[in-house]
Length: 280
Length: 320
Image 1 (spheres, rainbow over the protein chains, first blue to last red):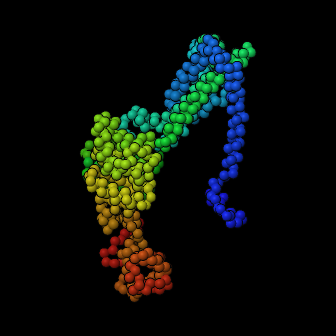
Image 2: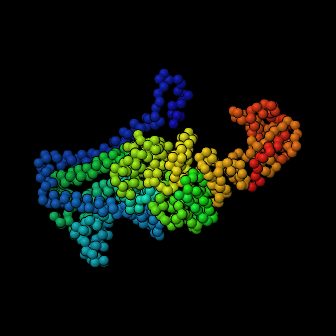
Image 3: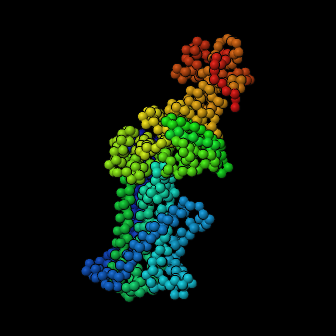
């Protein structure tokens, strides 16, 4: 640490100032990160918002409130919330089992969790259609139904909560639970009052990401949903069909709503975590 | 409440943490489990608390067999080396936890929490989170939390092990005073013989999963049962294959009955005390602790020959 300031070859300086190690590199790093983020993420997003609002907010508003667009958006947001809620519970449970329990096949299960990340989502859609389609080998036909769309979304968003909670659970101080037990707390009380509050930030982070992913999913849902307007058509598919029918303004407008929903969730998450940091 | 441990055995894989350990801890006493790391003392404490099941043997707390009771039913307060603070709760929340899960009325909980925070001198930190406290403060909070539920037995696992020397010293004296006020049967684990001697009424020396000796600090120091206990409780040196305390040896400048000759190798002054390293011609080395006045009278300097013998009534132990 001190090596950066102690440089005998530099000779005596009139005003010796302590500099943080890597001070010069820091400026370069920040510049690079900001530029990259701007070009890769912010610029395209700005383009969409500009396209959507280019014809005035009246046109924007009517584009997202057409019955079909509104139905698609509503379905997308409701399904997103449902999927996120299910994953919050099941994902935490899976993370718990993977960290706390010993059973044969645990490592295989741990590896499989990431499969929805690794798989092209269109393949996931195809797999689900083969399993739950009209020729379902398990006689469970979810094709062209909202439950089918939900199954597809559950599939692709599974890893988020599991992978957010797992490391926190591994690091969790087991002695806190032992202390609670010796104070008389039963297992459920220990989970509710000691374990869960310490996992909440991670569960919230995973759930937010799962929600953001669920409302934007296209590949996994496009096949199994059948894209029936007012029934199974989700927003991303609606955007696609608008573009196909050359209605780019409507597509951009619906995209902007999705963008805002995702942004709102991520900002809420940030605010929550800032609140949590005060304690730590 | 008295604690009686009978024939406890515990293995971790092939490692025998405890082998047939039996001890009696009288009600209201302050007892230290003393021994080197990995000797089994923490395991013994965790078995008494119900945090670890024994492979064989029984644990009685206050006359009732607690061997199979879960920790929740033992009415035992446990303090961990690394505090085990509930880090999402304030200091007051930590201390209140045991009372809240017993569904005590809010006002009673608040009164008791205030009382305990006062006892551990933490009143002004009630609304802080553990991360905002020093190690010593966290441990005092953990102690208040354990005492809140009025346990019959207080168990502390290396309670001061993670603290720096100065805080350690303060908390030791403070634990002793606290015990004199609260009178709860207290057992603490330590590997520091000075800590055990300073704080405890009774010391149980544990090594390699066995009890080496049980006694008061004076008994252990003056009548060690074996070479291990003698070596663990204080400085020792070796004379003719026998362990002896360096301050139980006297030096002469001419031969005396039953003294042996040795050459001074090194003289170290540590304030009032002088440490003299000696070499016996082909019969090994030893060291002697004398006062500064004695050293000056003998004019101890490296290279001179002196004569050594144990004082009358010196504590000795056969070389184990």
